[in-house]
Image 1 (tube, rainbow, N blue to C red):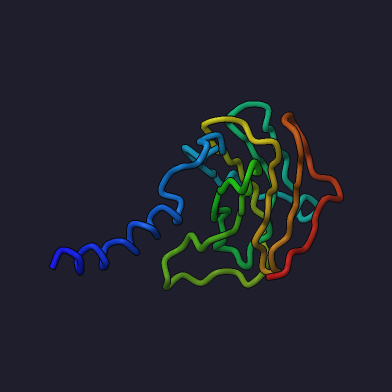
Image 2 (cartoon, rainbow, N blue to C red):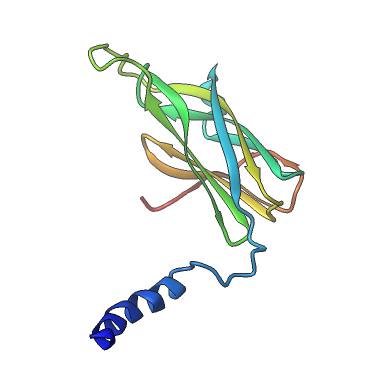
Length: 157
């Protein structure tokens, strides 16, 4: 009887160890808090840009993203650490009741994001999820304050 119980639980124990339930070195940075505020309108010429300050464990990102209609506001889709790189994906979401009509024209929304980490990362990539697809707007290596001029790169959707 006990042998069957042991045979049923052994695979689960082995999978639990392989699934990352521990045993790591604990040195990989982790996101501890995140926030994004839509700060209003920005100009079309500033769309798909972002400025990053990664000089401390609190990474600050400000930028301008294109939204699909007049009810769009900037939103932080995700903030993840891949190795030693912070990847922040900014998108837009509808900020109006379902029965409200929205202008059917592209809008440009500025935002300010703050992402807190338990320790610094060596690089930051900011991706905008726009009506035209995902675009990398800033990709920096090293700490400090960096902007995005001509750094937009389209990603495969």
